[in-house]
Image (cartoon, rainbow, N blue to C red):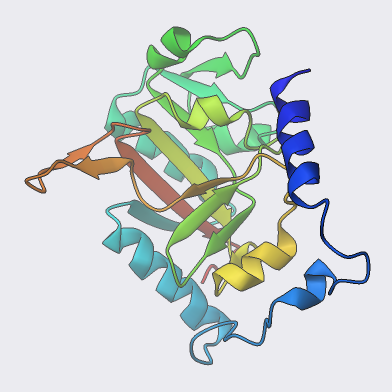
Length: 218
């Protein structure tokens, strides 16, 4: 019996005395809570996302689709990146303006291998305006979770407004709970007992978010 089977067996035992006619899970909790705070336009929602990302010490860039390759090349150059991890499904045109060495997202790559890489570029599943949170779900343009946790510099591209929602409840409705979800609110950071902030402990020290829209970007 593996760990998964052991946990599920314990759950079944814990639920063994629940009556068959008990209230279904979907109806057991009153879910009439506020779904979002305020009544914002699309533009205001994107602006709130940018403000909260910056408040969490992420570096925010804005550009149009056509400007994206140049913006990504500029970010990598400014960071001094000699190598970048690239998920298999990342649109190739995104990095067409840079000659930074590509490192494939490979199952055989160890944490030590990834620690030698300067940056990683990914897309995202969603971005939540009210909390300034980026959500990754391991899709082809985001790659394995490890590539966004080990390298010290993460560049994440958010398509606006299509990938931006106002609130966490709205995000849950769109995300697949069976996927490996990673929720990112700013660069990795922690504080000791004296409240001295240290960044880069549990993930990238630097998070740069590119909000990219159409040719008439928001």
